[in-house]
Image 1 (cartoon, one colour):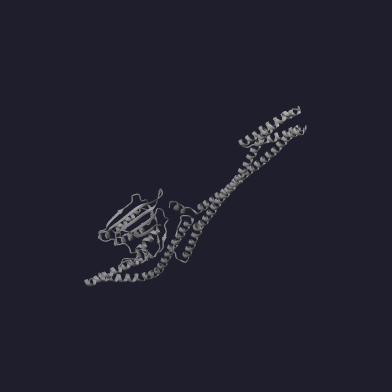
Image 2: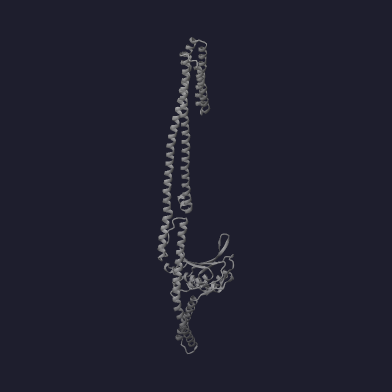
Length: 501
């Protein structure tokens, strides 16, 4: 399993390099086998040629030795006086041939058998000279027994046996060389066949690997991108490896996610823009009537002739008008762009100011609020007025969601990556009822709220303000109940304008 995971995490170029390297090694093995076979064939052929040539020389020696014996018999039988000269001439030629055999002998056994032939020939030569000397002095009676007993039966037989042994040696050497040549042929064919089979198997495996690691993933990516191109931005490419194609699939998935997010923002911006135009028109057209209604109700309330029952009704009218006025104010604030003026400030102080604003609600509901301020939080560029509004909205939502006697935890800390800080984090955790999943997906959409008396703009405004600071706001459910609002702010930001959506 470890090897398989390592293989699937290997880059394609590394796999191809290994494949090409193995093919190169197999081709090198085939070349080495061929070189070895050619070298072996050449050596065996040379040995075979040498043994055959030496065997022919041994046969020629046999013929020359027989001719020497014939010269002795010619002198003995016919009295040919030139026989000795012919014998000596043949002896010189035989000594040259024997010297050549001694000089070219390759093995101790060959040298030993050549030496035995030389000694046998020397014995024949000495006996022949004695016989020629006896015949030259007229001692034919002494020469005939020496020819019959010593020369023919002993010396000549020994010489002929030495030639037979030498020829047998060369014949055996020829047979060994021939068998060696055949064995080398069989071995080279076997080795070449094995290497070729390995090469074919590796080639098939490489083709299978290319089909599996390159062609098939590309087909999957192609089909997935075709689906994504139709607008199905929720579709994802299956990432099956950690190589270049896996990185490509991850990048395509990331791109699809970014496009989905951009699409949602655009749709939200379109909805907000359409609703904003209508809402702004309605808000502007009801502000003046609301002001007139409130002024009239306040004026009537200030007169002494108003009964208590009417006074209560007028106060209810004024409260309702104030609530509508606040709603109009929040609506207009949410619709206009936010331009944050950033100056270095302590984020802990901003959170403490927001806590003071919602302190009455915390005390009224007897909420146990825990504020854990990080002491090493550096000053960061922020707009205190706007950021306080954002935290007031977040704290208000948390307090409203927290039951009476519940708990609310606020903590700040430094975000670090590597050896240095990268930003700050503020987490607001409550133990309320949480947020329904269908609402959680559209939580930052304007006018989406879980409260019967809410207008659904608080979190929208909070995220706009935090975005203008270059930060992010994420709200999620806790497994043990309640929600957590996670705010992330960078250490450095040049300011910006946050639009709707």
